[in-house]
Length: 207
Image (cartoon, rainbow, N blue to C red; front, top):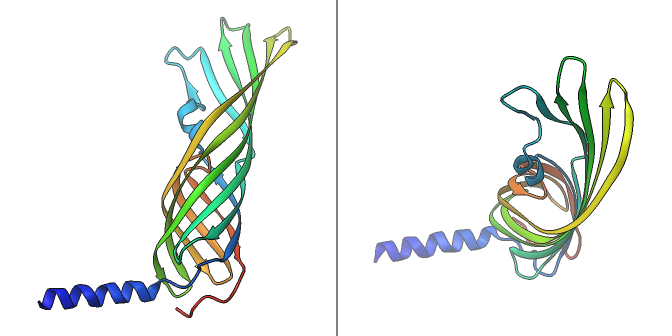
């Protein structure tokens, strides 16, 4: 019987930690690195024979704007839109004097639906998880250059659409109406991401 009372006490404490976010909107800007395209694509690697290498020279990172709306006290549905632009080159050495270089540029625009759940709340600190999925509209441009001739070959452009996913098992937000956050996840927002969020609407209950 005493265990039942203990379980009830813990349940009441946890329930008291969840503020009344219900019916409130949230607006989020975020930036992330090491997206699933980076990790699965195998960039920044060299072949065992040493004659081929792939190098990412620049990336804008995963830039996203997300809006969320709390349907329940700790559960929200959101819509995210983001953009990433990655550039690099592929080198293939046939001999000491002749190298073939292929430059590339990958762009992707992602639109996703996300579910976010806050499972631990302290004063001005939220710990949460979320999952999202949606279409990504991708454009890849490749140009071949032969060295030492250095003559640009024709640029090849390909477009594709894929369904992409993101899962963040751990996110931490610090602040009140205006807060900062950091996330650890895998998918279209990056392995490591962070940013700022703004919550509007009526005042949530004191924590």
